[in-house]
Image (cartoon, one colour):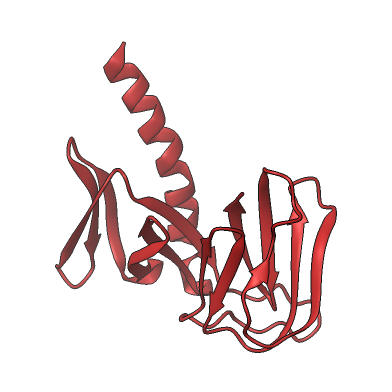
Length: 158
């Protein structure tokens, strides 16, 4: 039964990997992080295979190197492609978002508008002229939110 559950989870996790690999020419990548610290970032066009071993997530690159990450790490799929609406630009690779207490810190993003949305799409917070300062989310109730900075979106839990 345990093996069946593991195979089901692996199959479900590999489905997005296969889709993302097919779309990697559009600038998609995977980001591996643990405790809001980025452990690695790989452009999917560089990935030969992603596999799940007994001990870790294994990323085999086309250049022959291999990276392994513990299952405690979080894997995110990032789509840096533009959608053709207006003049959308690709997200810079060095944008980093992390939370401490009731503050959301954003590093590497251009100054501009920052918005926070609930999962139902309702805008909960907006900073029209954000200039790099931490975003205070203390007024929001506990839940999962989406932080939008320019064309980049990040999920966070409060």
